[in-house]
Structures are given as structure tokens and as C-alpha cells.
Image 1 (cartoon, rainbow, N blue to C red):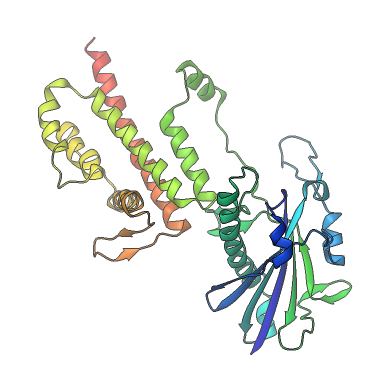
Image 2: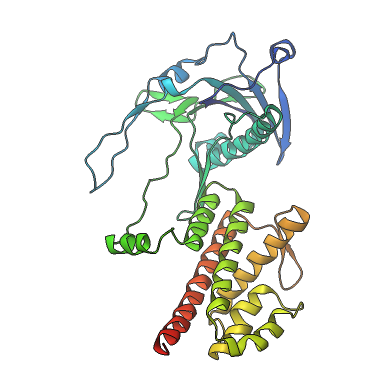
Length: 356
């Protein structure tokens, strides 16, 4: 077994809200997570911003982003003018062999764990300073690949805890080294495509459709791992769409619908996707798997609302803490339910026009 120190230099595009006692006391916060110890060491103001040769290489990097088969542009930018401060993270953990450290996936998981702990520290700094400039390190969830990426310039260096010797795990044309610099991963800024007629139709209707905006924001929150916000917005989008259906139903159906609405033993999802459509259209939401995911989204929303905890109880009463992938699946399911409700709304509107 090898005892490892992974040292990360994380670069920030703002200054930490230091008071004079930061320098006097020497901040060194240790957090324990998953049999690992994480040390958070903000830079002293008399330390260089880029302390080692690997960090100097990072400071000179230039990123170029080009769109494939679209616009011929070259929006290159340098890191150095955008960097103002630095935090050192030291992660102490054990591996069975040095070969484990050669896995990029393994190293990324360790880095991700460290960054989440750093964000915990930064969130406290933001709250106590009330500073709008202090923000968390961006962690972007990629549902297409079911993994999270870290979008921040950083370096990583590996040592043996017991001897202090370098662990040369990075292979380069010039040999093996124990350190590496990374720009951070960028999510491809793909925005999909819509026809110009769709844009014009939306403009003619006035303000953008609030349900679609809520869903877009919900998916955005999932990508930034803000799962509570994502759940809330998706649930709100569903409620708005379900209310739209009630607004266009025939008045002689109101009495029966009110009886369903007053039934406290039934969830809003069961009422709006099953009971009311069964009464009005003679059919329920057709996909049981998708329906269950919408149910779980609402149960999660309720737990967050009433207990400030992100979890739900499944049909066997097991407590489930949904991860990024599960929340994304819930929102996809809710989107499908919203589209199905939209079809029913159009049926009602067409019937109304036919009788005019």
C-alpha cells in the first residue's frame, strides 16, 4: 500500500475575502471525506501566484475554441489575465499500487472530491462576506456521458506521504513526471438547432413560453449540480402546464374535476396525469415508467420543501438520495409529461375553435 499526497493548485478569478488574521493564523482546514483527509490552504499574500514550474506553464497557456462546420472564428484567450488568487488543496489517501494513479478516471474522481470540499469552504466565505464576487468552482454534469467535469485552471502533483518522493505517473515525450497542468474541461457550447419559423412563432405569441423557460433552467441547474433548484423548476413547469389544461376544459366538467382536485389522498401528479385525463379524454398517461419518475420528482420536491433534504421514498418506502443522473432522468420524464399535456391542451383548443 502507498500513502499518497495529491496536491492541487486551484486558480480563482477573484480575490478571497481575506482579513488580516488569515495571514496571522495561517489557514489550514482539514476535512475528512471517504477515508481521505483534505487540507485547504489559501495562498498567503506574500506567496507567488504561480509557485512552481508547472504552474508557470499553466499561466502561459492559451485556449482556442472553434465551432465545427459553423462559424470560422478563433476566440482564443489566455488564463493569466483572468487569474487573481489561488488555493492549495492537499489530499491524503491510500492506493494499493502506483498503477492506480495512472488512471485518468481515478485521478479525476479524487480531484472532484477535493473540489467539492473546497466549494463547501468557498460557500461559507461567500455567505459570511456577503460578497457577490466569491463563487464556487464550476462543476458541470454531462448527462450525455454521465460524468462531471471541472472547469477551472489547476495543476496536480503527486508525492509519497512517507518519503516525500515524487510519484512520476505522467508520461510525456520527455519522460515521466509527477506534475501536470490542466486548463479545466469545457463543455462543448452546443445549443441545438431550431427553425427560424419556430423563433418567429414564439415572437408573435409575445413573451417566451414560461414552461419552456423553466425546463431550460431546470436542465441548466442539473448541469451545474444544483439539484434542488432543478427539481423545483421542473415541478413548477409541470404545475403551470397542468393548470393550463384545467383552464381550457369544458365548463360542464368542472364539478367532477373539482371533486378530483379536492381529494387529498391523491398526489397532484396522479390527478393531473391520470384521473382528470381519464375523466375528460378517456385515457391516462400512457408510460408507467415515465409516470413513476414524475411521481419521484414530486416526492423529492416535497422533501426539499418541508425538510430541506434532497431525497424521496420509493414505493417500497426506501429512502433514495437521487444523484445527477437520476435527477436528470426525472426532468426528462417531466418534460415528456408536459408535452403530453400540451397535446391534450391543443385538442381542447381545437374543439373550442370548431364550435365557434
